[in-house]
Image (cartoon, rainbow, N blue to C red; front, side):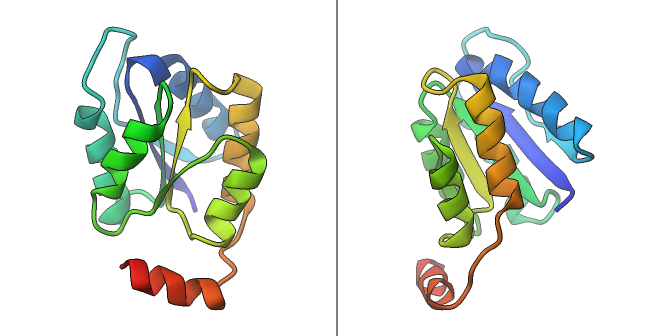
Length: 142
């Protein structure tokens, strides 16, 4: 995994900026889909294009951010081929990849601090899909 799509609404803007720097420092290519300020915006305008870029293979994975992460996950999951999980701690991030093969994660910038957000991202990116019984379940989702 080398390219990461990242997108946020106004509530997630600052965290998006920090995570982009963090990911680039680890050697990832980060494709930023906006927003580009803390001015209020409609999150689907930014989240959907990021999710579509994962679904069509332009990016290997995606991270979407908002106040809670819930609306962002809902938008991302409307895109066929995206499995977006809301992550709030390292266990939820690890299981999102190991059991659900999540190719996008959503986080709530108003609910978790920046250090935890970095740990969540690192855990998710470092985890591996376990396959097996989980593969059967993923096929049923698709």
